[in-house]
Amino acid sequence: MNNLFFFFCLLFASLFKLSFSRGGFPTSINVSGVENCSFAASARHLFADIKVSLAEEMHLKRLEELAKDYMSNSDLENAIMSFNRRCSGISRVYSIGKSVLGVPLWVMEISDKPGKEEAEPAFKYIGNVHGDEPVGRELLILLANWLCDNYMKDPLATLIVDNVHLHILPSMNPDGFSLRKRGNANNIDLNRDFPDQFFHMNDDPGAHQPETKAIMRWLDEMHFTASASLHGGALVANYPWDGTEDKKKYYYGCPDDETFRYMASIYSRSHHNMSLSEEFPGGITNGAYWYPIYGGMQDWNYLHAGCFELTLEISDDKWPNASELPTLFEYNKMSMLNLVASVVKTGIHGRIFSSDEGRPIPASIAIKGLNSTIHARETLADYHRLLVPAGKYEVIATMPGYKSRSTRIVLGEEAMTVDFVMDPAITPINSFLQRGWNCSLPGLHLEVFFILVLILVSVFLCFLLKRRVVLNYPKQRQSKRSVLGV
View 1: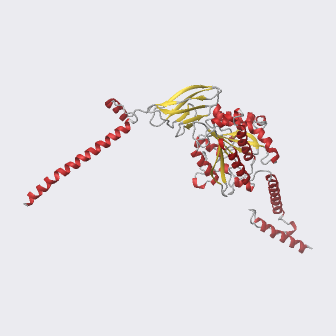
View 2: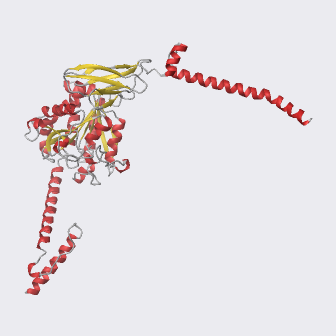
View 3: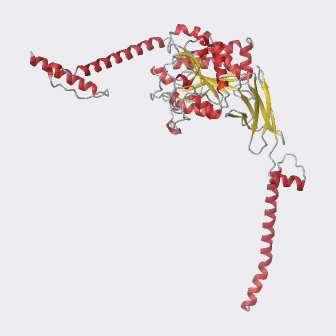
């Protein structure tokens, strides 16, 4: 009997060794003192491992069942194209790139003049950043169709379409969705893949995931005023900063902390019950105070492009039953609409021109006391600066080669237009030309005129020098002949 018991102990020990060799646990088991069967502790690890595997398997099966009533990636693409055909007068569809597995990242632009540059703010919504948080992709399709159905009928829909360029990316992570996991096809969390301000992570441009690169190119091409990404697993509007310098958890606000709190509150107060949260006062939170993260998209938007982005947790359940989606849309609809409308209804807006020719110039706009600067667009020189209403501000416009301009304003509850006309800086060359020449050259800068004069003088001097050489050449030959006695 003892021999049989010893045999079974050795058999189980060998089985454990085979299991642990690939799972990260110790690969050797002490079977000395067979009476005690000391591999029992390892057995507990194995059974725990099996329990976790079974739980994961059950979870995946549950997600597969739930996903049957959600749009697949193909369904989502068809829904986007169908929307564009139905609402072609106020929309266009374009791709910003592809996922790891080659799925196009489709964007819907909604505007009365889609695809055309206007002196209007641009806003973007991004859904499905995490593959296992699919509510956002469904709600964004519903939002696009609601705007289409209610344009010229509902005042808020009409305001947005006529005055904002709204860009909607329903799914940033289609691969993660199809795989039913948080990360992308390379198992990378896309909301940890952006360059970070505090730590040297993700600094190599070539190392970013294709989805991350697509977002970064998009920000370089488009001039977004504000944006939001839709997540699941909580009910709160999150704002920068998302991390801290020492990786500890505490409130760490960015320079525009008050403005971000105001934006987050617009979403929370417009929501069915977000502002009633017992966990998050007012339904909003500073990201670092909640829990610090690094390499996030939210902070990168603000730092890199001056785009004011929120991270919106819109459903306590990451993957609710699809029958709940219409209700979730109704709970979030006014929040999504009011957040987009805020880029038109609040803050300061304007354009910047040069005084000498009246042409638009892409100057920078700063607010005294805030270490934050936004830039006017290159082509139209329009800017859109979000600020908390009912405040006093000093607005400063700067541009290399021009004198800075500033103005003090009292911002009410509605948006204010603040245009700037900037004078070219007086350089020593300009000053000399203006005093000595006192000439007027319409359509030409004095600097350009001065350069042209220098070029003409140089050409004339070269001509005289060449002519002198040619005229002296016969005399030189005659002198040589005399010397040689020819």
